[in-house]
Amino acid sequence: MTTTEQKGETARGILTAAKTALLEVGYAGLSTRAIAETAGVPLSQIHYHFGSKQGLVLAVLERENQRLLKRQERLYHEELPLWKQWEQACDYLEDDLASGYVRVLHEMMAVGWSDPEIGKAVWGQIKGWFDLLASVAERAANELGGLGPFTPSEVAALAGLPFLGAEAIILLGLTEKDLPARSALRKVGAIIRTMEEES
Image 1 (cartoon, rainbow, N blue to C red):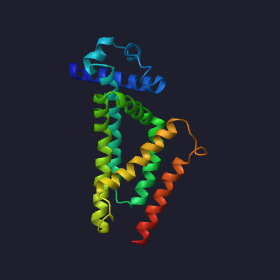
Image 2: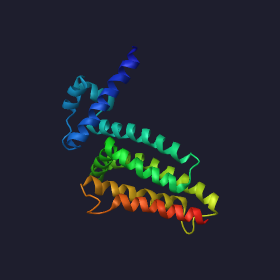
Image 3: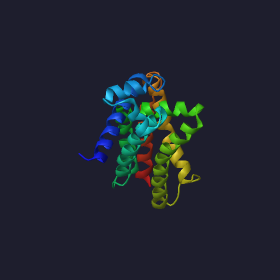
């Protein structure tokens, strides 16, 4: 293994340990020393690769975010009706909750409320999702001859924000009985299906 490969392996091990720790204790309880111990590396390696605790957690978020954005891009480039893509996005929500991505994202969003630097970095990750949704809306506008009074960016906001809201409610521990976020999202897919089949 070359030195470059070893560095990459060390960084990946640290990121994996950090993600596990985030899921267990959250951002506030995160200890870089404990992460280094779990990863089997000296604490100095965290600072070498990521600069700080914040840099490390943002790197965890970026790695997960890029992986999931690629998955979503593949979905939106498939020859599927929009309602079917919406249904798949609802399925992906369950996967992303189970993987811990949603928890990491919302942990960092919360930190970003009081730390503008982190807020800007988190928005940089979230923006990728809204840009992707806007490109899907633009494609739909071309196929349908418009989006009524909405711009593609506004449609992206209307499509993406309900998912962020549902994630926040689910992370708070609310069930479908408390607030039916999951079923509401699924029913949006049914409305899209009706609109597509009538057009």
